[in-house]
Amino acid sequence: MFQEDEETAKAEAGRTRPGLTMFMDGSRLDSGATRYAVAWQKGQSWVGVKNHMGYNQEAYDAEWAALARALEEAAKRQMVPEWVTIFTDAQAAIRCMASENPSPGQKYAILERRHIEALQRARPSIS
Image (cartoon, rainbow, N blue to C red):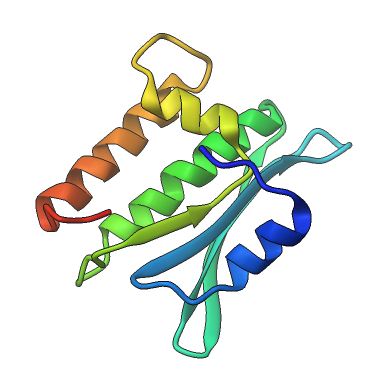
């Protein structure tokens, strides 16, 4: 788990790296609506997915769902990359994914672990 100041984070995000690099974020608006987006570069263009999750969830739910979706998108590629890098500020989602203890985001953590397992089956040397 890394924490960096804003300038260092911007420089790191802009660095070219091997494999698939994704950016994700989830949020809850003042209206109570939750949503997330996941984006990655395909050639010279940016592509991605976004999802409106409704009004009965929290920002954490959107972050957890975004991380699960990013891993799903990586796992369903025809050619699984050797490296997958996901930029996120969702430290709670990362901790939840790494733990098997019950938590509010447990359903997303289970999905995340399944996608990681699929990635590892497709490419055992994945990082």
